[in-house]
Amino acid sequence: MSSFFKQLYRYTHKRPYRHNENLWPYMRISRAISGEIISLNFRGQEIPIVSLASLAGAFSGPILLTATGPSVKEINFKRPMPCPSMGLNGAWSLHEAVDFKFYVIVDMGFLDCRQEMVAEIVSDPNLTLFTTAHGIARIVDRVSLAKIKCSLALIEDAAFKIFQPKIPATELGKRYANVRCASFADNRPDIGFTTDIRHGVFDAGTVAYWALQIAAFLGFNTLYIVGLDMNNFNQPRFYESESNKLPSFLAESFEDLILPAFTHASRQLKRHQIQVINLSPDSALPQHVFEKNAYHQVFI
Image (cartoon, rainbow, N blue to C red):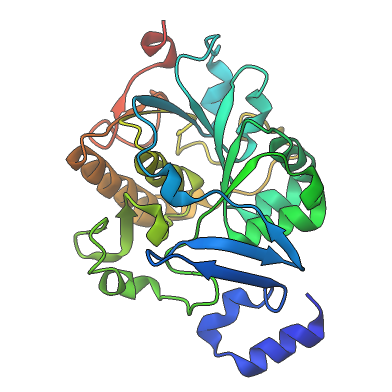
């Protein structure tokens, strides 16, 4: 964004709107009555996006969520895939072994640093990619709209909706108190979980938390997760090496945010009769949060 438009935006908008400054004046949106964005125009181009309403409860049965912890290297993935798969960030490195049907990228740092991988992901016509408006803007700018063959499903952080003011973390519980699909952890108004992503997705410092909410919204009732190690944060992710690994900030937020958030998610998913099996047996998330098992014991 040009410095002129950025300065103009900051002069004409209060600080709670600051997260929109790189999208204005290039993006135009419209919303459904239920709140989700249903049309998107960026730099004068109409961007085709999937109707979230059409995805609500459209699937059933199990799904494999593929996170990127080092333990993934120990898995020999069964072919053909026993259930649909959802990839997170760099899980695309497994695309020759795993047939991804869904994908989630909400980390702008990943989009900035793994542009070649992102270009491959969006070139897959059989894939539905869940990302934010900022993510779509980056992809269109760097890959081009013509090369995007996947379906784009636009999701929003519940605290940072496009062209709406930021909601402080401590006020999330109050602001979403009347949204029936949203729930909050006891004495933690900053830790939310939703089963209807049309109202926004709650963040907990990791894309895996977004994936749980998306999978529940899609209608899947058994969620298998590989690579949800949540430990050994100094080690490269399974697709990285020491020389090209991106920084991780999970260690700093694990005890105060990630663990209580996943504990809350576990309770909400059980309440909706959704089973979660963590296929990282040595994960730092304890057994009482998500049942643990090994990939090769589940998928024999």
